[in-house]
Length: 74
Image 1 (cartoon, one colour):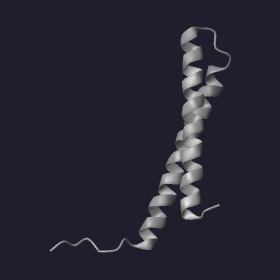
Image 2 (cartoon, rainbow, N blue to C red; image 1 turned 45 degrees about the vertical axis):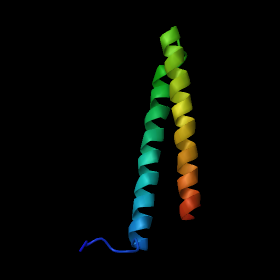
Image 3 (cartoon, rainbow, N blue to C red; image 1 turned 180 degrees about the horizontal axis):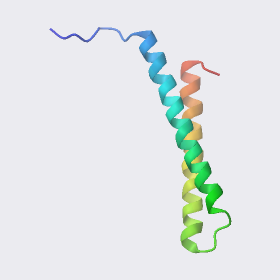
């Protein structure tokens, strides 16, 4: 027999969702800081980094919004 409950604990689901939101916020802050440190790109490599960081920042922001909507944490 398994010790895993048949239905997930609602409290545990809420805590996992909150943890996921906090992790996404941390990742967003990281990419925002990287963009701030990069400033105006002077090389093609820096421009590529800037585009990548902006895209990652955007995707993480969308994930955070979705996570909050699913949990009703608006």
